Length: 147
Image (cartoon, rainbow, N blue to C red; front, side, top):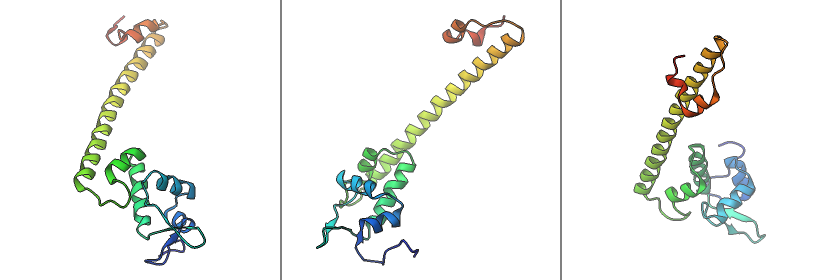
């Protein structure tokens, strides 16, 4: 347990949860407001007090964000705080995100190929002292241009 970790089983004030997770207090309030993090109990002094499992929940939210999920998608996968996790919902969400990434990779690969071709044709023409009309690049004719 590091210096920022609360005692096991003890309720955490918002600052302690922030320190334990590396997430700002404003982000924690946002997560709570939008149902990603369970509503904190209030102590006699009015301070928010989170259950110890909030550390794990915030960790899951942050992991999902690092994997490119929007907060709305995180809510769809993890459900609202306090509800049991639906394993099928988690699998479906992960598979959908993977499909999105694969589609993005395909799109990026096609863009890479197109840009590489355009650059090659431009350099080929410029090296011969000719100007390649930009309209040919925009129309996609440069790739087949042999002049």
